[in-house]
Image 1 (spheres, rainbow, N blue to C red):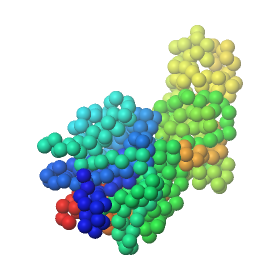
Image 2: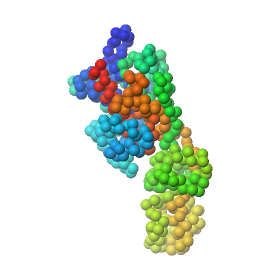
Image 3: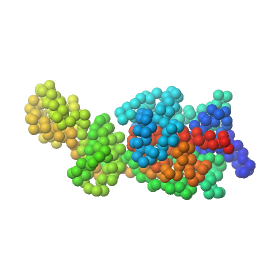
Image 4: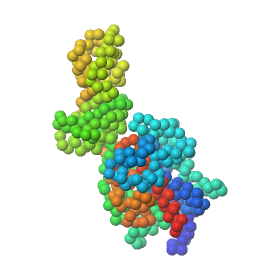
Length: 446
Ligand SMILES: Cc1cc2nc3c(=O)[nH]c(=O)nc-3n(C[C@H](O)[C@H](O)[C@H](O)COP(=O)(O)OP(=O)(O)OC[C@H]3O[C@@H](n4cnc5c(N)ncnc54)[C@H](O)[C@@H]3O)c2cc1C
């Protein structure tokens, strides 16, 4: 329980108040308690969450399977994927990186597997397994059997910080009007994507009020809308390994930003899936400059010549079969009507009657199917928001604010651009662990 403090009469003063019970906040509160247990000390830690339960967004991650991290064990290579933001994170990763995060989950009984793009998932394929580990971590008791040092205050929306002197926070105020005093505060209210999960972005306004620079959060890693009806008709179909190439006014977009490989999902509004999400910022930008075409390569492991040879072989082997049935050996059946319509090959044609010209046209079609992006969905459907606290204003050795020393800022509140692939949650595990570890360390000195 929190200790009474002479400066506030009988009001309890918590050692640490964590605002926001998502993955970053849970890791921070859990690590602060764990460090105190390791050092045989007592800390009072309050985790405030506006919802009636913790980690709502965590439970919908990775389509409910939770891509818990990315199995890139070289910190330099991993952080290079995070554009400019990566360079700030070295000191935090030197304390808690991917290897340590995997060990964290594995030693707590959650086995993991690595999929395409080094994405790590729990072997159960359930985000609930990750949630269970995190809540178990929060509830961990000391060897002597004393209750957990973390008190969870759910249904507790915070409306702001209370300061009596600049550069120091005294308390948080709840929507109920209650004021709760603390010595240290960890801010983990998340970004603004999928606000129905509780991440509505109030924390950014509080940071600005404290004198921090906040880069306006905008939707990032967002599904796209397209004008092609045939794409929407394929809603629910997934291509596990497709390649997309962007063309602006007929000219191939140069460099890595114009090409992505990976999973593409067809939806009732257009396209989603990691390859699309990772290209969404470029698509938004390019749409402002001209006519954008997304060329979809259904079979990127073949070049034009090997695909031509593969089709020749298929048509020879299946010469008595109808073309429309044989082609499902190469592409999903749902694509057959589109291929028939666009290739001009009649649906009753047998494989042995497909002409060379038709086959060459088919090769071109399978490797260069044109789709026309019209825009991006909004923040409510984005995976993350890009923006947040300016990174220069945070000390990444501790996650402490450089303006308000008894404040720590973690997770999606940080202005770090990152691709899809488990990087977002890894940033939460790392920054949450470092904040919890630092605050517990600082309290042992005070
Ligand atoms: C659909 C979807 C799929 C995703 N899949 C993946 C994936 O597979 N892998 C990956 O790495 N990342 C994924 N992400 C991103 C990942 O979920 C986020 O990066 C991560 O949840 C951020 O954690 P956080 O703790 O910083 O914030 P959040 O998870 O947003 O948690 C913030 C918490 O603070 C609470 N809160 C907010 N305001 C207040 C307040 N005023 N008072 C009290 N509490 C408050 C919220 O209710 C919430 O519980 C996905 C995101 C989405 C939307």
